Image 1 (cartoon, rainbow, N blue to C red):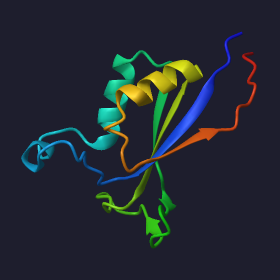
Image 2 (cartoon, one colour; image 1 turned 120 degrees about the horizontal axis):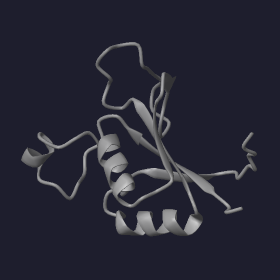
Image 3 (cartoon, helix red, strand yellow; image 1 turned 180 degrees about the vertical axis):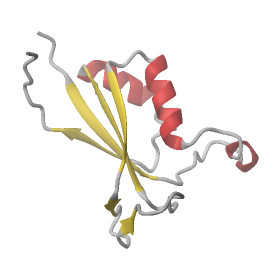
Length: 114
């Protein structure tokens, strides 16, 4: 059985890429969608986007996700599951995309399929 690793990437809802001119960011997908598309193109096993209902990042004020329109500092999470080698290759390939994000490896758990 292949060992899988899960990482979580934490970022703010309003995160923009720094390597793209401002006028191009107006027509680009949001940050989470960019990651999902790039991860799918890299053939990663599983990628999920979590919209946090409440929380804060980087010791900022608490942010409540009660509105239809999210505040730019509202926390978001992308979770990627695959082999550690494939995840590391993806992170290296897209390292510019992940500048200024917090990436954490989730403690491995053994899950049995029923």
